[in-house]
Length: 117
Image (tube, rainbow, N blue to C red; front, side):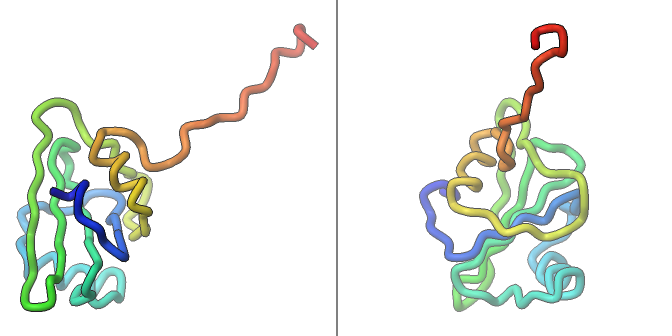
């Protein structure tokens, strides 16, 4: 469902989020922690707890909130854990995240060994 839906704004809360929070708790946290209005039509906010196999998504639909919960049957989500910032994602990055891939580019600069030069 999340892969097929189109959102104009996609936000991911990096780090850990207490997934025991419900709609009101997550909406208040968005407002207090990130100074954003959670009542943005077309926006989705994604959260992950300590276990990387579960995520929650909060969406304002104009007449109320929709809270989505997804648990991976196998494997884990490759969630960014370095900070407690809010990042915006592209639809392609959201699809990669839900497929189990990292949202950051995986290409690294490799140096040739000195003896090969």
